[in-house]
Length: 335
Image 1 (cartoon, rainbow, N blue to C red):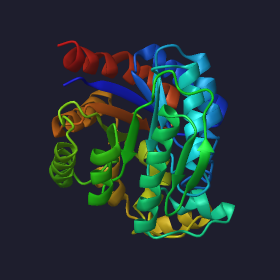
Image 2: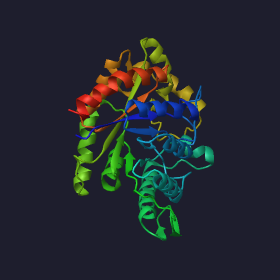
Image 3: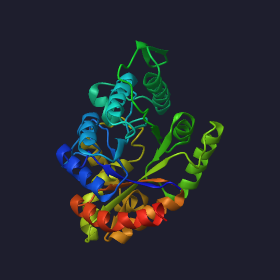
Image 4: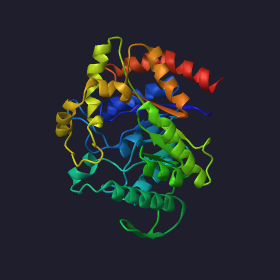
């Protein structure tokens, strides 16, 4: 297994300058890749941030030299026309060839409704995503593209500065339709924390989709978010990570709720146990972070994206970067 370890630069949690500073530390500690959020509104309101991912990634590319980087995830379905996503990531890959990837998904209402778009059904969003992937790939590799779909149209559209290296496209999602789309049209798959019992079925579905598309499942990149809150004081770590209860609101991805203030209010019904059962791991030692990562390695994922929501992000990066990450690299990459 060709394991890679990544750091999530959570734009909901830090302003752009702090996010960049943390990312430079992550590179210095030996992380292989970086994923950043791509939202208009963040998942919560209190002490929240929401920088623009595309411009921030350009700064990251200039400030770093080794990290590969991309979004987690970009929804090219409403506020972004797929051709503009193709242009943005084509430019990034022209400037930083071989270091850029794009991750796409069906999105959340908080990204689209504030800009005046109605919130479509999942089936429509999935159809839009499929068309978007086709348009993006075409613009990266062909000249003067014409495309007429159910939702998107381009007419003799041409990117004059195409990517020097075509970025891989990761498709995110946990349902059967999204997983199949990842195997059919994606270059990789991105998964979020789920109940552990579901991972065998998720990966079995991905294997089937890869096989049907003629792709080698074993070599197909499988990224997962490992969500941790780190502090020597368990209660302090738990209190800090409670802001993420919003992602556990029942049917939140289908809901048209777009206001982070309302998301916070609705999340008050989510019990702490729901957050810590599988979504997040509260860690009071570096060893516990290592064990959390190892669980996902054992499930079969080969791109381990560490998302820390910790009272001190500097403390997490220093401690895990100095002890835990070197152990994982030595044990799983250099063995």
